[in-house]
Length: 411
Image (cartoon, rainbow, N blue to C red; front, side, top):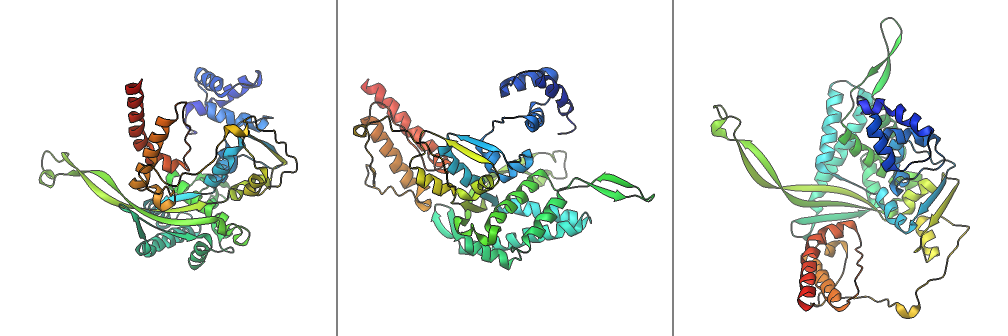
């Protein structure tokens, strides 16, 4: 933060950098430790005068990161290397998930500021948004359909969610006003007129960083849903999911509450329902439009962009100049096919409802084991999402240990 001595030493690193050639991030961090200067804030200052800036995809595609990093793409030339990954990154940048607990926490913090009469005209509309959404979650929780063990959900399309938002009073006409209220509520300082008539800048309490992330993420996805008369509404699916998790709690033993051992605690575990509201963006052009509409030109490079027409259509951009090299692998070396069922005869249908079931994961694991035992020169396996990868990581480790044992036994 701004109270850190490393932050106030940023100028040392910035001035030292101006007299040297370009460095990589490791050199910047190393010198920052030597000069007791923050490499992160120094890099942000150097970015203003830099002619070339290297950064991850999401720094450009995620509107919240662009805002926090003060990245202005207007008139810039953007080069995206390994651009075959850009579609997934764009979809994730325009998607958002929030739990009911996070919404309630944000509502409570905003409510506390309203009750303290701090920027009441800005915080009251924000509180109304949080209340409307939490009430909607409570009303629709009865519509959830069981999908698996202790898992239930319901999915709406974007147009249906827009209709729900209109019922809450969040429309194309009111949302820009709400955005102004949020921006004003997050300002940490404001000018106030003192008794002598002079103006003074004073600090004003704001909601916590976690509550800010909740509201900023929510407003980001609502802006896409309502943008240009709901242009991108059909590109969204909104899901309410309920799962159960085990939580640990430490409770004071009632028998010792007033005694000398009042601090003695009993640890208990209980199962808690967690409701998550997710806005899934299905179209990478939603987030990519923020880039393509502002930059001077975009250059995409990769070895696997073909077919170019479908890639261009996915991003919603017409590339006037294209260069595509021939494949180096002969047709006789490639076989493309589908496997509809695993070795045990179970269907391999990786839909949202099926991908998280133990039956599907078991069948994929058995199939991989069978393929690895047959193909001796190595196997490269791609999964449809990080979520599926996370669900199957433990199972894959089990099957891979069997593969290694099999290799050792047969070797």
